[in-house]
Amino acid sequence: MEMRKLMLGVGVLLAAAMTAAQAAALPFVVNQPAAKTAVINLIAGDGSANGGMNFNGGFKGDKTYVIPFGWKVIVKFRDEGVLAHSAIVIPRLAKLPVVISPSQAAFPGAFVKNLNQGWSKSQGVYTFSFTANKAGDFYIACGVPGHALAGQYIDLVISKSAKAASFK
Ligand SMILES: [Cu+2]
Image 1 (spheres, rainbow, N blue to C red):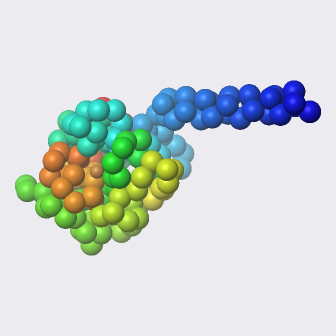
Image 2 (image 1 turned 180 degrees about the vertical axis):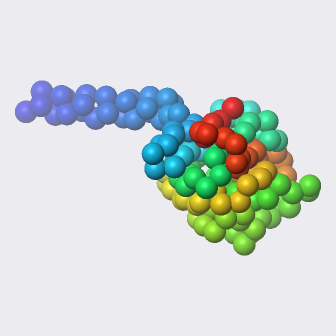
């Protein structure tokens, strides 16, 4: 009986360790060309870059997602940081506002629920999707007040010439 409990405990620990390792190894983008779909793993607070105010370690537009025009984009957002964060796709603004509202989304539904409050690590993954039916340059920005202004945004390019989605 005790041995059985111990074995169960070890199993739970192994499962937890595997989940953490899998999260660390998540690809930032997965192409599904036959379905013209890109699955994006968008991780807020991924390491200490910009005081944790980053996506996939990028900030102030120093990293870029490229998506082929017309593809469906499925964004799997998670927060690995200490602070609550969120995300919204917005047009590239010359000056980022302190507060971003869901009505500023460049595509219908292209934002994390509780945009201004944010989404914490304990809430797990939040998935949203949109169709990249406008070519051009956009930002993926955090919607928690002040975060985008502090640099928590990366670039998103919707390209008529790209054949696959990428992140770099
Ligand atoms: Cu944030």
